[in-house]
Length: 151
Image 1 (cartoon, one colour):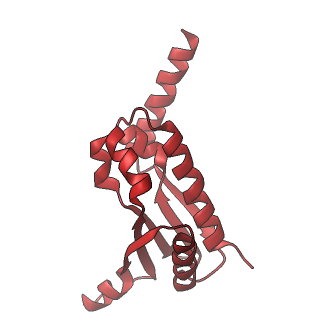
Image 2: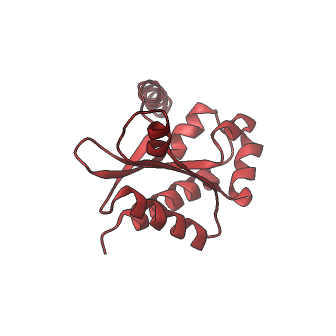
């Protein structure tokens, strides 16, 4: 009974946090945005991931006559990973392929941000894919760490 109550409390906290803008993991980078994006793209490609798109939000803003700090979005994935998740929870497809935003904050610091797989699990009530989600969590963390690491 105590375990059930603890689980319910944690689930409620997670849902509350998710609705308050949580559910994203932010990893600092020691490199500028473009360099971090290049490093992330290389790390992804080196592990068999396909980068489907690279979107330059700052360039888009410039075309609209606006100015903003650098922000690049990489959209990437691998059907060997995504398909099992979609079979567990078809609605998770709205959040796939994976995305990573590499952006510069107001202080000039570069960040790599991506959706927390545990947030996606809650968002889509994903059942039966804990092992896949665990691997995705580890892989995303490794990719972001490698891309942002000082060398």
